[in-house]
Length: 503
Image (cartoon, rainbow, N blue to C red; front, side, top):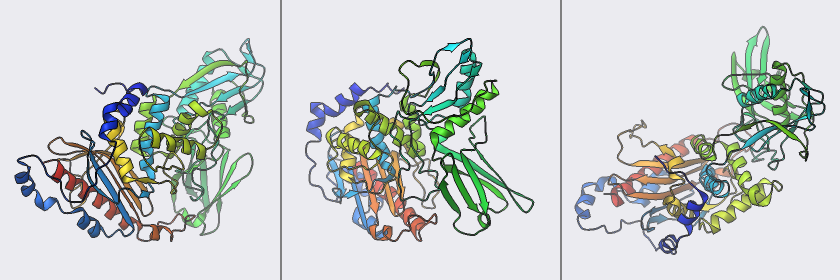
Protein backbone atom coordinates (compact mmCIF):
# COMPACT_ATOMS: atom_id res chain seq x y z
CA UNK A 1 0.00 0.00 0.00
CA UNK A 2 1.33 3.43 -0.91
CA UNK A 3 1.97 5.65 2.07
CA UNK A 4 0.04 8.93 2.23
CA UNK A 5 1.99 11.82 0.77
CA UNK A 6 2.39 15.08 2.65
CA UNK A 7 3.88 18.44 1.77
CA UNK A 8 6.31 18.07 4.65
CA UNK A 9 7.62 14.75 3.33
CA UNK A 10 7.81 16.23 -0.14
CA UNK A 11 9.98 19.13 0.97
CA UNK A 12 12.16 16.97 3.19
CA UNK A 13 12.79 14.62 0.28
CA UNK A 14 13.76 17.48 -1.99
CA UNK A 15 15.72 19.74 0.28
CA UNK A 16 17.63 17.37 2.54
CA UNK A 17 21.41 17.53 2.58
CA UNK A 18 21.63 14.14 0.88
CA UNK A 19 19.51 15.25 -2.04
CA UNK A 20 21.54 18.43 -2.42
CA UNK A 21 24.79 16.49 -2.48
CA UNK A 22 23.58 13.98 -5.02
CA UNK A 23 22.33 16.54 -7.49
CA UNK A 24 24.61 19.50 -6.95
CA UNK A 25 26.47 19.08 -10.24
CA UNK A 26 25.68 16.94 -13.26
CA UNK A 27 28.80 15.21 -14.57
CA UNK A 28 29.91 15.54 -18.14
CA UNK A 29 28.62 12.51 -20.04
CA UNK A 30 28.88 10.90 -23.41
CA UNK A 31 26.54 8.70 -25.37
CA UNK A 32 28.74 5.66 -24.80
CA UNK A 33 27.95 3.15 -22.07
CA UNK A 34 29.63 3.75 -18.73
CA UNK A 35 31.65 1.03 -17.03
CA UNK A 36 29.68 -1.35 -14.86
CA UNK A 37 30.83 -3.34 -11.82
CA UNK A 38 32.64 -6.63 -12.31
CA UNK A 39 30.67 -9.22 -14.21
CA UNK A 40 28.75 -6.67 -16.26
CA UNK A 41 30.95 -7.06 -19.31
CA UNK A 42 29.70 -10.56 -20.06
CA UNK A 43 26.09 -9.47 -19.62
CA UNK A 44 26.62 -6.44 -21.86
CA UNK A 45 28.06 -8.68 -24.55
CA UNK A 46 24.96 -10.87 -24.48
CA UNK A 47 22.62 -7.93 -25.06
CA UNK A 48 24.86 -5.97 -27.40
CA UNK A 49 22.45 -6.24 -30.38
CA UNK A 50 19.80 -4.36 -28.37
CA UNK A 51 22.18 -1.64 -27.21
CA UNK A 52 22.62 0.31 -30.42
CA UNK A 53 24.24 3.73 -29.98
CA UNK A 54 21.87 6.60 -29.21
CA UNK A 55 23.25 8.67 -32.10
CA UNK A 56 22.36 5.89 -34.52
CA UNK A 57 18.87 5.48 -33.08
CA UNK A 58 18.17 9.20 -33.44
CA UNK A 59 19.45 9.23 -37.00
CA UNK A 60 17.30 6.22 -37.91
CA UNK A 61 14.16 7.94 -36.62
CA UNK A 62 14.56 10.71 -39.23
CA UNK A 63 12.68 13.28 -37.17
CA UNK A 64 14.70 16.27 -38.24
CA UNK A 65 14.80 19.18 -35.83
CA UNK A 66 16.11 18.47 -32.34
CA UNK A 67 16.06 15.45 -30.05
CA UNK A 68 17.21 15.96 -26.50
CA UNK A 69 17.31 13.36 -23.76
CA UNK A 70 18.74 12.70 -20.35
CA UNK A 71 18.64 9.60 -18.14
CA UNK A 72 19.59 9.63 -14.45
CA UNK A 73 20.14 6.89 -11.88
CA UNK A 74 17.64 7.71 -9.14
CA UNK A 75 19.73 6.17 -6.36
CA UNK A 76 23.01 7.97 -6.97
CA UNK A 77 21.75 10.98 -8.93
CA UNK A 78 24.36 10.23 -11.60
CA UNK A 79 23.61 11.28 -15.16
CA UNK A 80 24.04 8.11 -17.21
CA UNK A 81 23.51 9.50 -20.70
CA UNK A 82 22.59 12.81 -22.18
CA UNK A 83 22.30 14.33 -25.64
CA UNK A 84 21.34 17.95 -26.27
CA UNK A 85 19.96 17.74 -22.76
CA UNK A 86 20.50 21.40 -21.87
CA UNK A 87 18.44 22.95 -24.68
CA UNK A 88 14.98 24.21 -23.76
CA UNK A 89 12.24 22.51 -25.75
CA UNK A 90 8.41 22.55 -25.62
CA UNK A 91 7.45 19.87 -23.06
CA UNK A 92 3.81 19.61 -24.22
CA UNK A 93 1.75 17.61 -21.71
CA UNK A 94 4.82 16.51 -19.77
CA UNK A 95 4.16 19.90 -18.15
CA UNK A 96 1.36 18.18 -16.21
CA UNK A 97 3.92 16.17 -14.22
CA UNK A 98 5.37 19.45 -12.92
CA UNK A 99 1.86 20.77 -12.31
CA UNK A 100 1.10 17.69 -10.21
CA UNK A 101 4.17 18.30 -8.06
CA UNK A 102 3.31 22.00 -7.75
CA UNK A 103 -0.25 21.25 -6.66
CA UNK A 104 0.84 18.58 -4.16
CA UNK A 105 3.37 21.00 -2.70
CA UNK A 106 0.96 23.90 -2.32
CA UNK A 107 -2.35 22.14 -1.62
CA UNK A 108 -1.45 18.72 -0.20
CA UNK A 109 -2.54 15.30 -1.41
CA UNK A 110 -5.76 15.28 0.63
CA UNK A 111 -7.05 18.66 -0.54
CA UNK A 112 -10.65 18.66 -1.75
CA UNK A 113 -12.36 21.29 -3.86
CA UNK A 114 -15.75 22.39 -2.53
CA UNK A 115 -18.80 23.68 -4.41
CA UNK A 116 -21.38 25.35 -2.17
CA UNK A 117 -24.97 26.55 -2.24
CA UNK A 118 -25.13 29.84 -0.34
CA UNK A 119 -28.34 31.68 0.49
CA UNK A 120 -27.80 35.42 0.29
CA UNK A 121 -30.37 35.80 3.08
CA UNK A 122 -31.67 33.55 5.83
CA UNK A 123 -34.12 30.77 5.01
CA UNK A 124 -37.54 31.38 6.60
CA UNK A 125 -40.13 28.65 6.53
CA UNK A 126 -38.36 26.91 3.67
CA UNK A 127 -38.29 30.12 1.61
CA UNK A 128 -35.18 31.94 0.38
CA UNK A 129 -36.43 35.50 -0.15
CA UNK A 130 -33.35 36.50 -2.13
CA UNK A 131 -30.91 34.73 -4.43
CA UNK A 132 -29.24 31.35 -4.08
CA UNK A 133 -25.56 31.40 -5.04
CA UNK A 134 -23.94 28.42 -6.72
CA UNK A 135 -20.39 29.07 -5.53
CA UNK A 136 -17.64 27.22 -7.32
CA UNK A 137 -14.46 26.37 -5.48
CA UNK A 138 -12.36 25.66 -8.55
CA UNK A 139 -13.32 21.98 -8.78
CA UNK A 140 -12.22 20.74 -12.22
CA UNK A 141 -14.17 17.48 -11.81
CA UNK A 142 -17.63 18.86 -11.00
CA UNK A 143 -20.18 17.13 -13.23
CA UNK A 144 -23.91 17.02 -13.87
CA UNK A 145 -24.36 14.16 -11.41
CA UNK A 146 -22.84 16.31 -8.65
CA UNK A 147 -25.23 19.19 -9.43
CA UNK A 148 -28.15 16.78 -9.30
CA UNK A 149 -26.96 15.69 -5.85
CA UNK A 150 -26.65 19.31 -4.72
CA UNK A 151 -30.25 19.94 -5.75
CA UNK A 152 -31.30 16.89 -3.73
CA UNK A 153 -29.40 18.20 -0.71
CA UNK A 154 -31.08 21.59 -1.08
CA UNK A 155 -34.49 19.94 -0.95
CA UNK A 156 -33.41 17.85 2.04
CA UNK A 157 -32.36 21.07 3.80
CA UNK A 158 -36.00 22.14 3.76
CA UNK A 159 -35.91 24.65 0.93
CA UNK A 160 -39.14 24.70 -1.09
CA UNK A 161 -39.04 28.13 -2.69
CA UNK A 162 -36.46 30.58 -4.01
CA UNK A 163 -37.83 34.04 -4.74
CA UNK A 164 -34.64 35.22 -6.35
CA UNK A 165 -32.51 33.46 -8.96
CA UNK A 166 -29.65 30.98 -9.08
CA UNK A 167 -26.58 33.17 -9.34
CA UNK A 168 -23.28 31.47 -10.20
CA UNK A 169 -19.94 32.47 -8.69
CA UNK A 170 -16.69 31.60 -10.44
CA UNK A 171 -14.29 33.94 -8.70
CA UNK A 172 -12.35 31.27 -6.82
CA UNK A 173 -9.93 31.15 -9.78
CA UNK A 174 -8.96 33.64 -12.47
CA UNK A 175 -11.19 33.47 -15.53
CA UNK A 176 -9.43 32.09 -18.62
CA UNK A 177 -11.29 32.51 -21.92
CA UNK A 178 -9.11 29.94 -23.68
CA UNK A 179 -6.00 28.07 -22.57
CA UNK A 180 -4.28 28.64 -25.92
CA UNK A 181 -5.63 31.24 -28.34
CA UNK A 182 -3.88 29.57 -31.29
CA UNK A 183 -6.23 26.58 -31.22
CA UNK A 184 -9.40 26.20 -33.35
CA UNK A 185 -12.57 27.49 -31.67
CA UNK A 186 -14.30 24.11 -31.51
CA UNK A 187 -11.70 21.82 -29.93
CA UNK A 188 -12.93 20.58 -26.54
CA UNK A 189 -9.39 20.27 -25.15
CA UNK A 190 -9.10 24.08 -25.17
CA UNK A 191 -12.03 25.16 -22.96
CA UNK A 192 -12.67 28.21 -20.84
CA UNK A 193 -11.45 27.80 -17.24
CA UNK A 194 -13.26 29.27 -14.24
CA UNK A 195 -13.71 28.86 -10.53
CA UNK A 196 -17.01 27.16 -11.46
CA UNK A 197 -16.52 24.42 -14.04
CA UNK A 198 -18.92 21.74 -15.23
CA UNK A 199 -18.24 18.56 -17.24
CA UNK A 200 -14.73 19.85 -17.98
CA UNK A 201 -16.54 22.83 -19.56
CA UNK A 202 -17.76 20.78 -22.47
CA UNK A 203 -21.23 20.49 -23.98
CA UNK A 204 -22.38 17.38 -25.85
CA UNK A 205 -23.49 18.07 -29.42
CA UNK A 206 -25.45 15.30 -31.13
CA UNK A 207 -27.08 15.22 -34.55
CA UNK A 208 -29.35 12.85 -36.43
CA UNK A 209 -30.75 13.08 -39.93
CA UNK A 210 -34.43 14.00 -39.82
CA UNK A 211 -36.37 14.33 -43.04
CA UNK A 212 -34.52 16.77 -45.28
CA UNK A 213 -32.49 18.20 -42.42
CA UNK A 214 -31.05 17.37 -39.03
CA UNK A 215 -32.30 17.17 -35.46
CA UNK A 216 -29.64 18.51 -33.09
CA UNK A 217 -29.29 18.54 -29.32
CA UNK A 218 -26.90 20.29 -26.95
CA UNK A 219 -26.84 18.72 -23.49
CA UNK A 220 -24.85 18.48 -20.28
CA UNK A 221 -24.72 14.72 -20.19
CA UNK A 222 -23.01 12.68 -17.49
CA UNK A 223 -23.21 9.12 -16.26
CA UNK A 224 -26.85 9.43 -15.11
CA UNK A 225 -28.35 12.51 -16.74
CA UNK A 226 -28.41 14.48 -19.98
CA UNK A 227 -30.29 17.76 -19.45
CA UNK A 228 -30.54 19.91 -22.55
CA UNK A 229 -29.18 23.43 -22.31
CA UNK A 230 -29.78 26.78 -23.99
CA UNK A 231 -26.55 28.45 -22.96
CA UNK A 232 -24.90 26.67 -25.90
CA UNK A 233 -26.89 26.53 -29.16
CA UNK A 234 -26.26 24.95 -32.53
CA UNK A 235 -27.55 25.76 -36.02
CA UNK A 236 -26.94 23.67 -39.14
CA UNK A 237 -25.71 25.78 -42.08
CA UNK A 238 -25.89 24.78 -45.74
CA UNK A 239 -22.19 24.86 -46.54
CA UNK A 240 -19.09 22.69 -46.84
CA UNK A 241 -16.53 24.80 -44.98
CA UNK A 242 -15.72 25.83 -42.36
CA UNK A 243 -17.03 22.89 -40.40
CA UNK A 244 -17.78 25.01 -37.31
CA UNK A 245 -18.16 28.69 -36.51
CA UNK A 246 -18.53 30.27 -33.06
CA UNK A 247 -19.96 33.59 -31.92
CA UNK A 248 -20.45 35.04 -28.45
CA UNK A 249 -24.07 36.19 -28.25
CA UNK A 250 -23.86 37.55 -24.74
CA UNK A 251 -26.22 35.18 -22.98
CA UNK A 252 -25.23 32.09 -24.98
CA UNK A 253 -22.60 30.45 -27.16
CA UNK A 254 -23.81 30.40 -30.78
CA UNK A 255 -22.40 27.60 -32.93
CA UNK A 256 -23.01 26.69 -36.54
CA UNK A 257 -21.97 23.48 -38.27
CA UNK A 258 -21.64 22.73 -41.98
CA UNK A 259 -24.37 20.37 -43.18
CA UNK A 260 -21.97 18.73 -45.63
CA UNK A 261 -19.84 17.51 -42.70
CA UNK A 262 -22.57 15.76 -40.74
CA UNK A 263 -23.41 12.57 -42.64
CA UNK A 264 -26.22 10.46 -41.20
CA UNK A 265 -25.57 11.25 -37.57
CA UNK A 266 -23.00 11.48 -34.82
CA UNK A 267 -21.86 13.34 -31.71
CA UNK A 268 -18.91 15.25 -30.31
CA UNK A 269 -17.99 17.46 -27.38
CA UNK A 270 -17.62 21.21 -27.89
CA UNK A 271 -16.05 23.70 -25.47
CA UNK A 272 -18.24 25.83 -23.22
CA UNK A 273 -17.29 29.51 -23.13
CA UNK A 274 -19.77 30.49 -20.41
CA UNK A 275 -19.15 27.88 -17.71
CA UNK A 276 -20.81 29.80 -14.87
CA UNK A 277 -24.07 30.24 -16.79
CA UNK A 278 -23.82 26.64 -17.97
CA UNK A 279 -23.63 25.34 -14.39
CA UNK A 280 -26.41 27.64 -13.18
CA UNK A 281 -28.77 26.50 -15.96
CA UNK A 282 -28.14 22.82 -15.28
CA UNK A 283 -28.58 23.26 -11.52
CA UNK A 284 -31.85 25.14 -12.04
CA UNK A 285 -33.13 22.20 -14.08
CA UNK A 286 -32.52 19.81 -11.19
CA UNK A 287 -33.94 22.24 -8.61
CA UNK A 288 -37.18 22.41 -10.61
CA UNK A 289 -37.25 18.61 -10.73
CA UNK A 290 -37.42 18.74 -6.91
CA UNK A 291 -40.30 21.20 -6.99
CA UNK A 292 -38.17 24.30 -6.41
CA UNK A 293 -39.12 26.66 -9.25
CA UNK A 294 -36.16 28.92 -10.00
CA UNK A 295 -34.39 30.48 -12.96
CA UNK A 296 -30.66 31.05 -13.52
CA UNK A 297 -29.54 34.62 -12.95
CA UNK A 298 -26.50 36.76 -13.61
CA UNK A 299 -23.07 35.86 -12.31
CA UNK A 300 -22.17 37.28 -8.90
CA UNK A 301 -18.71 38.79 -8.58
CA UNK A 302 -18.27 38.56 -4.81
CA UNK A 303 -19.71 36.33 -2.12
CA UNK A 304 -21.90 37.82 0.63
CA UNK A 305 -20.25 38.18 4.02
CA UNK A 306 -23.36 36.93 5.80
CA UNK A 307 -24.44 34.18 3.43
CA UNK A 308 -25.75 30.86 4.76
CA UNK A 309 -24.28 27.64 3.35
CA UNK A 310 -27.16 25.24 2.75
CA UNK A 311 -25.37 22.38 0.98
CA UNK A 312 -22.00 21.52 -0.49
CA UNK A 313 -20.24 19.01 -2.69
CA UNK A 314 -16.63 18.02 -2.17
CA UNK A 315 -14.37 16.57 -4.82
CA UNK A 316 -12.24 13.48 -4.51
CA UNK A 317 -8.86 14.05 -2.81
CA UNK A 318 -6.35 15.93 -4.92
CA UNK A 319 -4.12 12.89 -5.34
CA UNK A 320 -6.93 11.02 -7.11
CA UNK A 321 -7.69 14.03 -9.30
CA UNK A 322 -4.04 14.27 -10.29
CA UNK A 323 -3.85 10.57 -11.09
CA UNK A 324 -6.74 10.96 -13.52
CA UNK A 325 -5.26 14.16 -14.91
CA UNK A 326 -2.02 12.36 -15.72
CA UNK A 327 -3.82 9.33 -17.11
CA UNK A 328 -6.22 11.19 -19.38
CA UNK A 329 -4.08 14.32 -19.85
CA UNK A 330 -7.01 16.62 -19.15
CA UNK A 331 -6.08 20.23 -19.81
CA UNK A 332 -8.82 21.88 -17.78
CA UNK A 333 -7.88 19.87 -14.70
CA UNK A 334 -4.26 20.91 -15.06
CA UNK A 335 -5.09 24.60 -15.34
CA UNK A 336 -7.57 24.51 -12.45
CA UNK A 337 -5.27 22.70 -10.00
CA UNK A 338 -2.31 24.83 -11.07
CA UNK A 339 -4.15 28.09 -10.51
CA UNK A 340 -5.62 26.78 -7.25
CA UNK A 341 -2.08 26.03 -6.06
CA UNK A 342 -1.03 29.59 -6.89
CA UNK A 343 -4.10 31.03 -5.14
CA UNK A 344 -2.97 29.56 -1.81
CA UNK A 345 -0.25 32.20 -1.65
CA UNK A 346 -1.21 34.82 -4.25
CA UNK A 347 -4.99 34.87 -3.89
CA UNK A 348 -7.57 34.16 -6.56
CA UNK A 349 -6.72 37.27 -8.56
CA UNK A 350 -4.15 37.38 -11.29
CA UNK A 351 -4.14 35.40 -14.50
CA UNK A 352 -3.11 32.10 -16.02
CA UNK A 353 0.17 33.55 -17.23
CA UNK A 354 1.04 34.85 -13.76
CA UNK A 355 0.17 31.50 -12.23
CA UNK A 356 2.39 29.79 -14.80
CA UNK A 357 5.21 32.16 -13.83
CA UNK A 358 4.70 31.17 -10.20
CA UNK A 359 4.98 27.50 -11.15
CA UNK A 360 8.09 28.27 -13.18
CA UNK A 361 9.67 29.78 -10.07
CA UNK A 362 8.69 26.68 -8.07
CA UNK A 363 10.24 24.45 -10.72
CA UNK A 364 13.51 26.35 -10.71
CA UNK A 365 13.85 26.95 -6.97
CA UNK A 366 12.28 23.83 -5.42
CA UNK A 367 12.78 21.20 -8.13
CA UNK A 368 16.11 22.60 -9.36
CA UNK A 369 14.88 22.86 -12.96
CA UNK A 370 17.32 25.43 -14.29
CA UNK A 371 15.86 27.50 -17.14
CA UNK A 372 12.33 26.08 -16.88
CA UNK A 373 9.67 28.46 -18.19
CA UNK A 374 5.97 27.60 -18.38
CA UNK A 375 3.19 29.59 -20.03
CA UNK A 376 0.41 27.41 -18.63
CA UNK A 377 -0.14 24.34 -16.44
CA UNK A 378 -1.30 21.92 -19.13
CA UNK A 379 1.40 22.15 -21.81
CA UNK A 380 -1.08 23.17 -24.50
CA UNK A 381 0.80 26.40 -25.13
CA UNK A 382 3.86 25.68 -27.24
CA UNK A 383 5.91 28.58 -25.85
CA UNK A 384 6.87 26.71 -22.66
CA UNK A 385 10.50 25.60 -22.47
CA UNK A 386 12.14 22.87 -20.40
CA UNK A 387 15.38 20.99 -20.99
CA UNK A 388 15.53 17.20 -20.86
CA UNK A 389 18.32 17.41 -18.29
CA UNK A 390 16.29 19.65 -15.98
CA UNK A 391 13.26 17.40 -16.26
CA UNK A 392 15.11 14.13 -15.66
CA UNK A 393 17.04 15.50 -12.69
CA UNK A 394 13.86 16.91 -11.14
CA UNK A 395 12.21 13.51 -11.47
CA UNK A 396 15.20 11.87 -9.81
CA UNK A 397 15.07 14.40 -6.97
CA UNK A 398 11.44 13.74 -6.11
CA UNK A 399 11.70 9.97 -6.49
CA UNK A 400 12.53 9.36 -2.84
CA UNK A 401 9.45 11.24 -1.63
CA UNK A 402 7.29 8.80 -3.62
CA UNK A 403 4.87 11.53 -4.66
CA UNK A 404 4.82 11.32 -8.42
CA UNK A 405 5.68 7.85 -9.66
CA UNK A 406 2.62 6.07 -8.18
CA UNK A 407 0.22 8.44 -9.96
CA UNK A 408 1.94 8.39 -13.34
CA UNK A 409 0.49 6.31 -16.15
CA UNK A 410 2.01 2.93 -17.05
CA UNK A 411 3.45 3.20 -20.56
CA UNK A 412 3.15 0.03 -22.61
CA UNK A 413 6.21 -1.26 -24.39
CA UNK A 414 5.47 -2.75 -27.79
CA UNK A 415 6.56 -5.46 -30.19
CA UNK A 416 8.05 -4.45 -33.53
CA UNK A 417 4.62 -4.92 -35.14
CA UNK A 418 3.18 -2.28 -32.79
CA UNK A 419 1.21 -4.62 -30.55
CA UNK A 420 1.54 -4.24 -26.78
CA UNK A 421 4.17 -6.48 -25.22
CA UNK A 422 2.87 -7.28 -21.73
CA UNK A 423 5.90 -9.50 -21.08
CA UNK A 424 8.46 -6.77 -21.78
CA UNK A 425 11.09 -6.81 -19.00
CA UNK A 426 11.27 -3.01 -18.74
CA UNK A 427 8.46 -1.24 -16.90
CA UNK A 428 7.77 2.45 -17.49
CA UNK A 429 5.70 4.95 -15.51
CA UNK A 430 5.68 8.27 -17.30
CA UNK A 431 3.83 11.23 -18.81
CA UNK A 432 3.52 11.64 -22.54
CA UNK A 433 3.26 14.91 -24.41
CA UNK A 434 2.15 15.51 -27.97
CA UNK A 435 1.69 18.57 -30.15
CA UNK A 436 2.06 18.61 -33.91
CA UNK A 437 5.73 17.75 -34.57
CA UNK A 438 6.41 17.74 -30.81
CA UNK A 439 6.73 14.50 -28.87
CA UNK A 440 7.85 14.20 -25.28
CA UNK A 441 8.07 11.46 -22.68
CA UNK A 442 9.34 11.77 -19.13
CA UNK A 443 9.13 9.57 -16.08
CA UNK A 444 10.66 6.47 -14.55
CA UNK A 445 11.82 3.17 -15.97
CA UNK A 446 12.64 -0.01 -14.08
CA UNK A 447 15.13 -2.25 -15.83
CA UNK A 448 15.07 -6.03 -15.74
CA UNK A 449 17.49 -6.15 -12.81
CA UNK A 450 15.43 -3.65 -10.80
CA UNK A 451 17.58 -0.58 -11.53
CA UNK A 452 15.40 2.54 -11.51
CA UNK A 453 16.13 5.49 -13.74
CA UNK A 454 14.49 8.85 -14.32
CA UNK A 455 14.48 10.06 -17.89
CA UNK A 456 13.17 12.70 -20.25
CA UNK A 457 13.04 12.60 -24.05
CA UNK A 458 12.03 15.75 -25.97
CA UNK A 459 11.75 15.92 -29.75
CA UNK A 460 10.64 18.88 -31.86
CA UNK A 461 10.83 19.82 -35.53
CA UNK A 462 10.59 23.61 -35.53
CA UNK A 463 10.69 23.89 -39.30
CA UNK A 464 7.65 21.65 -39.69
CA UNK A 465 5.83 23.55 -36.95
CA UNK A 466 6.22 26.89 -38.74
CA UNK A 467 4.20 25.45 -41.63
CA UNK A 468 1.16 24.55 -39.50
CA UNK A 469 -2.13 26.37 -40.03
CA UNK A 470 -2.98 26.76 -36.36
CA UNK A 471 -6.64 27.65 -36.92
CA UNK A 472 -7.30 24.58 -39.07
CA UNK A 473 -8.73 21.36 -37.68
CA UNK A 474 -6.94 19.32 -40.33
CA UNK A 475 -3.94 17.24 -39.27
CA UNK A 476 -0.75 18.70 -40.82
CA UNK A 477 0.70 16.47 -43.56
CA UNK A 478 3.31 14.10 -42.21
CA UNK A 479 2.54 14.74 -38.53
CA UNK A 480 1.07 11.29 -37.84
CA UNK A 481 4.03 9.39 -39.26
CA UNK A 482 6.44 11.79 -37.52
CA UNK A 483 4.75 11.14 -34.19
CA UNK A 484 4.87 7.38 -34.75
CA UNK A 485 8.60 7.49 -35.42
CA UNK A 486 9.13 9.67 -32.34
CA UNK A 487 7.38 7.13 -30.12
CA UNK A 488 9.37 4.29 -31.65
CA UNK A 489 12.55 6.23 -30.88
CA UNK A 490 11.45 6.69 -27.28
CA UNK A 491 11.06 2.94 -26.82
CA UNK A 492 14.39 2.17 -28.48
CA UNK A 493 16.19 4.64 -26.21
CA UNK A 494 14.52 3.15 -23.14
CA UNK A 495 15.47 -0.35 -24.24
CA UNK A 496 19.04 0.83 -24.78
CA UNK A 497 19.23 2.21 -21.26
CA UNK A 498 17.74 -0.94 -19.82
CA UNK A 499 20.30 -3.06 -21.65
CA UNK A 500 23.32 -0.95 -20.84
CA UNK A 501 22.58 0.27 -17.32
CA UNK A 502 20.12 -2.31 -16.01
CA UNK A 503 21.83 -5.62 -16.70
